[in-house]
Length: 282
Ligand SMILES: Cc1cc2nc3c(=O)[nH]c(=O)nc-3n(C[C@H](O)[C@H](O)[C@H](O)COP(=O)(O)O)c2cc1C
Image (cartoon, rainbow, N blue to C red; front, top):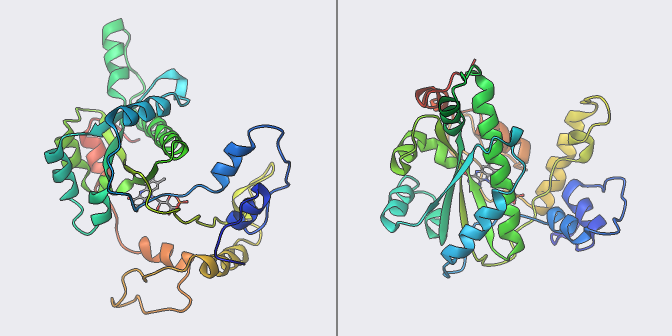
């Protein structure tokens, strides 16, 4: 396998998943599928601003995404004030690439408006449980994903940033997020410096099911994916290198990296933050 992703749709799927799906060449929409098959996050940007009006246009496109029960529980905050941007950048001193991104947005879940509507219309809100938080989170995730597509399609590049939740309370204060409005993810945005790198995914035999969920052959599939991915997209660094229990391994694989990632606590305080925002998570 070469390190360059090929261009035809079937070949793009093969590069992404190791083998193509049962392939049907569509009579229309091919360019959209080819774009999705070959899309990637971008973390390097030209030193060129993105017009405020374009960011607003992309946000409007993203907010046109499907929304659970038409509840419209995602709000997008575009960071325009340079001093606010600096305050956010300062939370991530090790991620200078994020600070260099020409634009930054934060996608929020908002279950506050729904409850306000209940007050205004005189009906009790009697669904104060996990689903209220979950629905708003899913809406925000869908808008976030749609924004990535909109941005890519106009030639921009972007990268979602869940790291904003490492500082959920601080970011919430900086943005003035009221009760029951919470950050789901940020987004860096800019004109890409280069093509980016298409990231291979687990084979469809692992993530695509027919009728019934199956884990048949899972470990072998993950091993094969590790090997395929290592060939075309080896990790530049080993996570927690030099620390006890994280000896250098060769090859350093995707599954090793993911197992290392969650071998240490990450955002264990997020539930407490969400509860402090007024949500019940039972
Ligand atoms: C919800 C979400 C949060 C993410 N957060 C971060 C992040 O904080 N930092 C980062 O560098 N990439 C982040 N990413 C980007 C992923 O690392 C990236 O999508 C993944 O490695 C696959 O690469 P690809 O998007 O190029 O296919 C995030 C992606 C998603 C969907």
